[in-house]
Image (cartoon, rainbow, N blue to C red; front, side, top):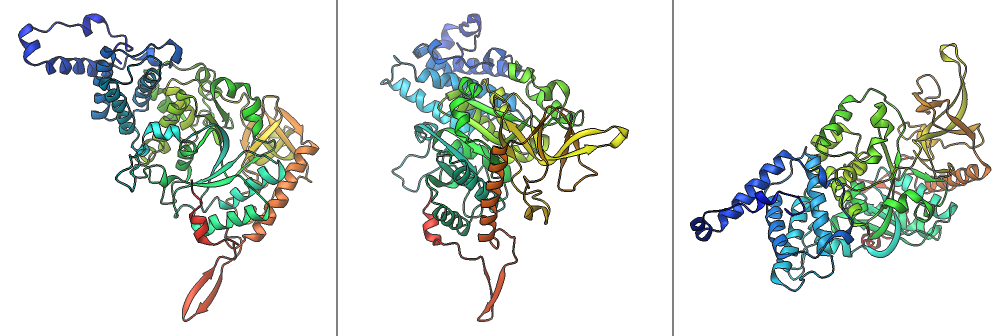
Length: 544
């Protein structure tokens, strides 16, 4: 709204000759819009960098409705360029304030002007994020709106979402058994996919049979294509990989949601994050740092971030980043992302992250400057003026203990292929990379972590790529704090490996660990994918 943009009153209350004023009132609106365009081009909007709390807002006035409506129509008419992340952030900040003010008590909610304004704000949101508005099959039903999307979040609900496709199906099975059978987590889980090409019926049927065998409850399937419009997303071709993840967070019916990659493995029940993590309680967000690697090798990435923030006042979290201050290559490990969508600011920041992962934006901008989706979450919050939290420690490592004698210096190293993360007390919480030694290697994907070996974990050391050691160990860390694996953690990993092997034995053919059996019937080749225990029709019905 123009009043919240703090425009000088000498600009807002300009004089128009009487004869023009009465002959054509639209001229005043046109001039106002031109002034707005000039100011927007100047991008002098540092005062928008922090979204104010709702209690500071007063009921909206008729004058503000007119001003805000002018800005809203400008937003609808002039779309955001695919490379202007900062502009999208500024618009989100303004929309957030509008939405907060719409919810203030005392608004003239029954007046025609207010109802039209409320509808215009909804239209503005769907113009910026068209994937929200999905048409319905019935003409009598209204298409999905932002308000309806928010209503779909079950009040007070908490849960885990696991985006799953054909390539990640195997590791999703491993993770589910790690959560349910080993850690006894009771958080409900939603398996998220984007249509039948992404996760075909036979894979969903296999998951259902797995739930039956292990008596696993409170798990549902969520098809994104039935909730969001895929036109600008192009997720349903099954080739989008990382892009599904932010939309899984958005479409999930959970208010407090933990996004987990299929190859994440937890060493504590994930409930502990929602129940006890102080940083999450403060901001409604919790992100985890990646490894401190690639120092001075990603100048283009830092230039990209600086360009997007050229008219933005950096947050306290961004200013203290070691990646920013010491020129490392990657900030966030998006293997686990935790958000409280009941907080409007967090939800709006998530919309920014989703926009960064829409097809055109990700293909020509996002994924060319960063690695997949991983930096889009904190950047979306940052540019949308939303306070966000990172876990204190940067990514560590779990692996074998070795002595490194290169360069004539004997150093103690830990080498492995997984990234370790700790809780606020410095205790191992989860790791990214899965239970197998190396997913991209034919033999490595059939070989699991062995806790009987001299397994250690380390934090705060120096990373180096493992060019001379075991080919399955991607990297090593020397120095820092090296610790022995506790008996409890070793047992969790060992038992998780045990149930993972059972899954692999059951679905070996489906997940590509065995060659498919080809039979000949009536002159035709037919390939068997093995018995999965549940009919395909039932799996098709398992969507929220």
